[in-house]
Image 1 (tube, rainbow over the protein chains, first blue to last red):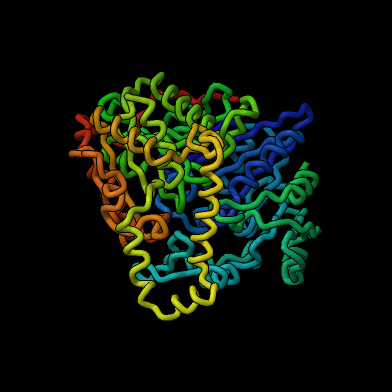
Image 2: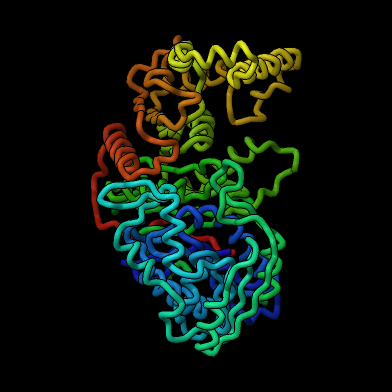
Length: 244
Length: 312
């Protein structure tokens, strides 16, 4: 496991590279985390996911988008158009680090929608874990938890959501992208979800959608009163099986 | 990887006697580390090193702009740090202190001579324990640390409640949660007093000291003129509810000028609002500059650090 910064000096991104611990590792995976409080809580589950992927022969890069986690930037500087570019950069960086040709993008919650909208080069598969299905839907979820902050800002569980961020989120939809990888897999751990609109959008972009329901606690919701989420081992096991 | 990362003002570090710990070193704006104590941030609970609401990242970078370097890391089993490799019988408190020792060692090896420990909640408690063992820890910033309730606390807590008729009705009818809690605590205490001291804790098995132990820790810190910034918030109101409660909890201690205390009556425990984060940032930076002086040379934030990135 190698913690490091990458990207431009003015736009540093923090990543943890976990090289494959198996001989046959020719697949790479970039993990796109949720953001805000969900991102903090899901950290430990995603760390274990990366560890299990590396043990199964996958070269893994976890990273923080600009303005989140350990990456550069104030929290207010992190916005979806920047994060989409960060995902493309992370894919190129992993390819350079690991020498892999085949890259799977794994995204959880908003990270899932970002992964689907990133249009990163050479990604063979999307693996989306309870993805947010649309920015507008996500905004409604945020609003339910928002308290008023300064300058018309929302404060959602300790993280600021300004007017520009809300505009960017509202525009975030898989219907707005030109291409998606040909193989899209969705893992649902919180019960059935209507994916008909997504399936249609993906079909129009010549992508196949497979869906698997595996019930487990939400990694991005607070587990007890500790500020961190649960680790749904059965869900992680399925994601590993579908990636490698 | 070192060549790739040398251009950044922060650096990922893997360290520890088992190589299981992960941290991020933040370079002060061009200042050699030995001129000003390096701030070391300790996890609050199981939230990883970025801190609640990314608070530690914000504070670390605010310090860096003033030329003050810092180090944020994850204790064993938290965040990106792997589990410790010790004997399963080793207590969590001992593992935490060993991890802090390892963090100070890796910084010492890079030329750091003095440290300031910073922690929120359990991180504050761990900081106080570590500070009492290391004379090179010259200061600490304790955010909502554990402390003891006082007579003043109970007066402020119960006075508004006894004036409410509904409270008395619930006590008379046996439906008062406060009364039930009180009886539970008293029963527990009575049982506890029948056990040997080691079984009651406070003998190294927990990071929370008894009042006498904490008194001794603080007394020693005052003697060696270590500096403390204590910040309490309203988020801790079930344990701390007025500005000077900390001083009242240790009536025999003369803190002189070693302790500064702020009570943020409108902040929650994790400083989730912008105004509270900004206030805390200002308090921290001004305290640091007052206690340890301004770094002598300021160069652009981004000069390479001497801490090397260990690779797997």
